[in-house]
Image: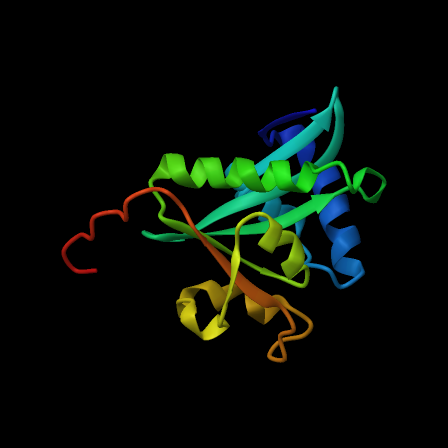
Amino acid sequence: MNVSKARIADVPAMHQLINDFANRGDMLPRALSQIYENLRDYFVVRDGSMFIGCAALHVSWLDLAEIRSLAVKQSRHGERLGATLVQSCIDEARSLGLPQVFCLTRQPEFFQKQGFTLVDKSQLPHKVWAECYYCPLFPDCDEVALIRALDTPPPEKHQGQ
């Protein structure tokens, strides 16, 4: 297995996998244009040249990023590939100097195993809710918010923030 940054050629497979999960109600759907526009956020895991899964780290603010669109082919569940993708996102967040990452999920147990803790959604900045408008469950969200502090010092705040 190898995890790397996503490439343009990965987008059709990412789109298909993410939207398969979205059609089951497990995550928000993503349009092709959204994936292309945010391609630099994504990591993919491959077995040789075969695409297996993806996850994105989306920076929300100077001190917070979201792990989103985590999806691994059903036939490969149980191989810790999701955990590997989450770790790749965490490693990148650390390299960017972010002190914490969060996720919104219907699978809180998975993220708790990755060191995340439950947090009341109201503790997250309003900015993180921008995509909620696209959710078919809006405004009756059934996702759980979790957050993980990283071992990086908080970024310095700039004047005017």
